[in-house]
Length: 445
Image (cartoon, rainbow, N blue to C red; front, side, top):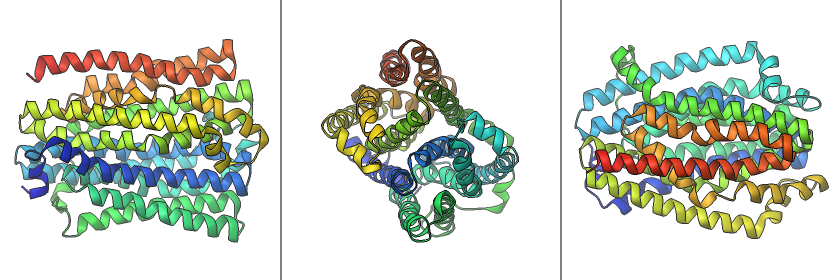
C-alpha cells in the first residue's frame, strides 16, 4: 500500500482533512471560476440572452457527464475501502472497470444527445429568443462531453489513492485554457456563442487528457492493466449501486433545472432565467470551500471505514461539519456585504442589476448549514450504503426543492422560486441530522 494512502489511517484527522480538502477546494474553485468566466464573457460581450443560453445548456452537458462522476465516486468508494483493507487487486480491477464503463456510456449518451438535440433543449427551457443561441452553444460543447465524463470519473479516483494535488491540477488546466480561449474566440475572433462553446469543449478535452496522462505515468499507484478492462459483473453492480446515487442526484438536478426554467420563464420571462444563471454561477463558486471539505471527507472516511477505525470515522464526521459550517457562515457574510458588487462583474444590464442582488441573498440564506446535508450523504457513500446515501442526496433537490419551485411561484411569482431554496435547505438539513445521528449511534460505537 502506498504511503499517501496509508496516511489516511494514521495521521491526525484535522491535518488529513486540510491535506485532502484544500486541493479539492482549489480545484473546485478554479473549475467554478471557469464557468463564471464563461458567463461573464458571454454576458459582457454577447448579451443577456447569452447568459440564459449558458444556463440552459450546461445542465444538459453535466447530466451526461454525471455518468462519469457516478462511476468515479462509486468506484473510488470501493477503491478507498480496498486500499484500507490492503486489497490492491480489487482496487486495480475496479479502476479498469471504471474506465471501460465511462467510455462506453459517455459515447452512447453523447450520440443520443446529438440526435435529439432540439427536443432536449426545449425540455430544459430553451424557449423563445433563447433557443437559437442555446442551440449554437450546445452543438459545439456536446463533443467535449465524453472527455468531461472521463475527467469526472478520474478525479475522485485520484483522490481515493491519496493524491489530491493531482486532482486539483486536473481541474486547473481546463479553467486556464478556457479563459484564454474565451478571450481569443469571443473577443478577438468575434465567433460569438460558437466560439464560447468551442473554448468550453477544448477545455473539457484538456481535462480528460491530463487525467489520462496521470494514470499512464508513474505518479499513479493505480495501474492500467488491459485485462481489467473486461467488465466484471460483481464490480459493476457495486459501482452502479454506489455511483447510482450521484447519477440520480444529477438527474434530480436536471429535473430541477427543467422546473426552475419553466417557472422562471412563465413568471418572469427570459430575464429571470438570466438572473438565475448569475445566482447559480455565484453559488457554485462561493460553495466551493464547503464542497472541498466534502470531497476531502470522502477518502478519509472511506479508508477508515474499510480499516474498521470507527473512532477516526466519527472524528472525521464531526470535524468536517465543523470546518464546513464555519466556511458556510463566512460565505454568507460576504454575500450579504458585496451582493451588488458581485452582480456588476457579470453585467451592466439595468434590469439584471435591479433584480439579482435580493434574489441571490434569499437563495443563500441557509448557506451556514448546508455542510450537514453534504457530509450526511457523503458518509453513507463512503460506507458503501447506497440507499440512505440516495435518500439524503435527493432530500434537498429532489424531494423538497422541485415541488417547492413549482408550487410557490403560483402564489408568490418569481419570488417563490428564490424562497424555495432556503426552505428546502432547512428541511433537508433537519432530516439529515436525524438520520446521521441514528447511524453513528447504531453502527459507529
